[in-house]
Each structure stands twice: as structure tokens, then as C-alpha cells.
Amino acid sequence: MQRNGPALKIFSGTSSEYLAEKIAAAQGIPLGKISIQRFSDGEIQPIFLESIRGDYVFLVQSTFAPGDNMLELLLMIDAARRASAYKIIAVIPYFGYARQDRKDKPRVAIGSKLMANLLVAAGADRVVTMDLHAPQIQGYFDIPVDHLDSSAIFIPYIQNLQLENLTFAAPDVGSANRIREVASYFNVEMVICDKHRKRANEIASMVVIGEVKDRDIVLIDDICDTAGTLTKAAKLLKDKGARSVRALCTHPVLSGNAYANIDNSVLEELVICDTIPVRGQSSKLKVVSVADLFASAIRNAYENQSITSLFIHSQQRNK
Image (cartoon, rainbow, N blue to C red):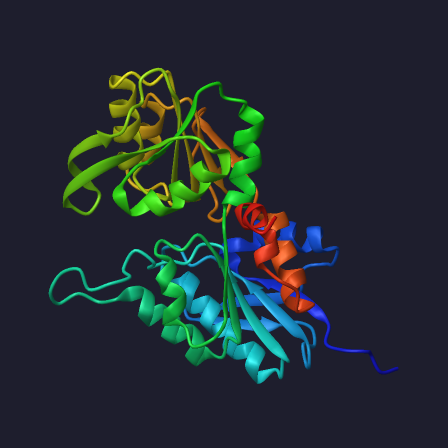
């Protein structure tokens, strides 16, 4: 019997299987069967264990360190193309190398542009990702990019907190635009923590721009790496008279002394998404899942429906 059209199938690389299983369950379909084999020297060979000829193939893989995660995704894309998939969509909850988005000093690579080139060269037809460190990275791709916004998850969470004197804070100037949209949604004030770095992951100084006394502060950022910026900003805000400080962060890279920094901080809590698996423990960490949001985005992409409709702040603007 001939089927009506291309089927929707979801497969996962090894780094994001925990999330892909939840996405597939939310979609109401089983996770596709794939084997990621490794030779004794570490060489990677993905093998699809079911036919994908003529199918919409969604490949879920965050590309955090090590680099094998990106290489594995590239090989999965190539294997799907050679297996005659109809469309190949790379679902990358966390897009690694996004912090290398420009040539900010002499003789450095623009890593995010190189990663985009590799994905296109491998044969991806589309990319679905979330909270790129710099939104302009979408322009590095010569294929469509669906850029999901964590505000669809964070805004309901903040609403449930019912904070009396809510104020949003950007942990650095680069986050100001992101925070401004959320603050506008709630119709509340925002402040900015302006930092100066000596070198990567090391902050030399920080000042607060705006009034925080007796306010319940919510810091929002896209990446939490060593947690140095967030915890230093939280202490500064408390020292300036904030009543409470909590942070919401999309991508929990959490490297180096991150867990110790979080535990020893003045933060009430650090709310993170599951775009990256959390390998450590802290009583202040709370994980919220992006699975339902990505499942909706996958369904909309498959059915040629709008992705923008999934953004809460966009819904408000369109009223």
C-alpha cells in the first residue's frame, strides 16, 4: 500500500538521547532506531536501522564539548542524505561555538560560521535551535533556521513565582535586548550589570546600571558556563539592596567551578533548561524541559506551520 506522504521520524545522537526520547514521546511517535558505532580508535560511524527513504528526518543533537558531538551530527546528516531522506532537519537545542560569532581580536577563528558551513555542506536542509548566543548567527546559514526562544518556557515559570516587586536584570550588556523583551512583556523595569573581562571566564569588574533596592530580581542569560558572571552579578545586586535574586539560564554548560560557584552564591535558585545534560548536583538548580517546545516546533515544521506562533512575547505583539 502506498502511503500518502513523507513520514516524520526523529533520531538522536548519543549526547541528546535523554531529550530526544522526551521530544518523540511528546510528538506521540517512537524514537527512530539508529546505531552509533565506534571503531577502536574512536572513529564514529552512524547507521540507520530502519528505512528513511522519502521521510522527513529530524536529527536531535546538541553540539556541546567535546567536538565529537558535532562530528557525530555531521555524519548522521551525511548518512541520512545517502539513505535518500526527503528532508533532513538538524535539531540542535544547544548550538556549540556560538560564542565565537565575530572576529573580536586579530587572528582568531569565527567558529560559529565554520559550524554553519559544515552543517550545510553535510546536507542539512534546515536547522532548529534555541537561544543562539548571538541571533545574527542565523545569517551564517544558507538554509532556513528556526530560532526558538526560551521565553516560551521561562515566562510561565516567572508568572507562577508571583514576585511582588519584579525587576529583570541583564548579567551583561550583550543580554540587554533579550531582557528588554521579557521586561516589556511584564511591563516592569530592568537593570544591567556591566562587566569588564581580563580574559575569557575571568571578570575584572562589574557595575549595576539601574535601581534594585527592595526589588525581587530575575537574572536571565543564554549560557551558564562557569557561573562566574551570574553569581558575581547576584552578589552585586544583593549588595545594592535587592530583596531576592534568582537566575534563569537556557544552556547549562556548567564547566570548571560552576557547581561550587552556584552553591556558594546568594542566588535563591538557578533555573536551567535540559538542552545540555546536567552532570552535577546542586540544591539551587532546577531543570525545566524544552521537549514540548521542540516537539511543537518539529510538528509545525513538518506541517509547514508558523514557528513564530510558539513565542509568547510574539503572541502578545500580534494581539
